[in-house]
Image 1 (spheres, rainbow, N blue to C red):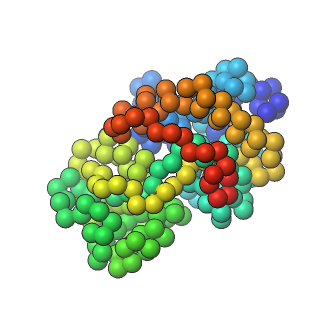
Image 2: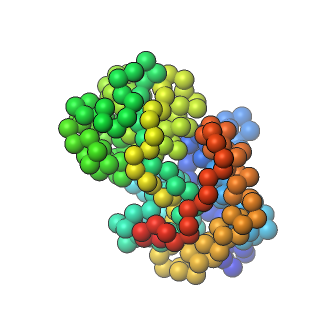
Image 3: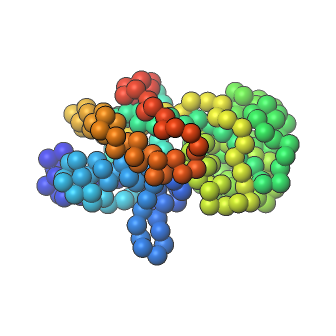
Length: 248
């Protein structure tokens, strides 16, 4: 943390294409969303300034960029799993999502996970969703793509009947593209964590303490209302208990 403070900027692994979580405005260049807002709050907590250097990550590169020191944290709808926790450490969880289903707007035959039986279902390679599909819809034909955009396009082009991934990401897709919709409720629980280097246990403790602070002072709820809460109806959810997810 002293090194980050001296540098004056937090190097964060994230994305610029995830609506509601971390999306870059092509005109202003500003990145907004729940993950982006948390990164800025953490940067301000450490350095006194919400300055963030956003480094683009993918599902395949997140652990490596933390391990080699390119980024200080990864904040990118990053599901905590025991396998990932062998390579890096997780602070949090700070949000709980779950796998859900995205289909074309004119698809009325798929409304719940049971309807995926026998259907062609896509998801991102290296995501946790592929195993969820195998568990809840074992007869589905699974096809894998590298990116969120490729999966969404496959649904729009009828090359896939449905796309399964974290509801939070799918809601962002539907928010930006009215040709697709999210159906049903999440059928798994996906706790999101903030990735930090495994070699820096003091940073994990520091970030966990900061999360407890922003949850207690209302900053977490305020950020949720301004981002995810613009699409998800209802009251602000209770944040998950810090340390409650396996691997965190």
